[in-house]
Image 1 (cartoon, rainbow, N blue to C red):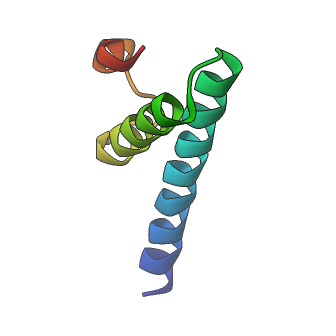
Image 2 (cartoon, rainbow, N blue to C red):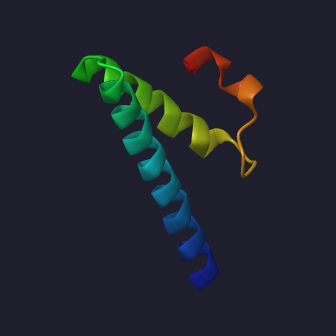
Length: 64
């Protein structure tokens, strides 16, 4: 049970980091808060649905 709990927490951290990275990237590109939140949400969702450690660029083209 402990290993499952750690894996879930690790997955949550990855999603959190992706959200923050997406938001900050858009804000640094002078996008609005709403646009930044939208990309952050898309990126966070994308990393949680990808089973690989590195997301292939083909899977990211629609939000890049």
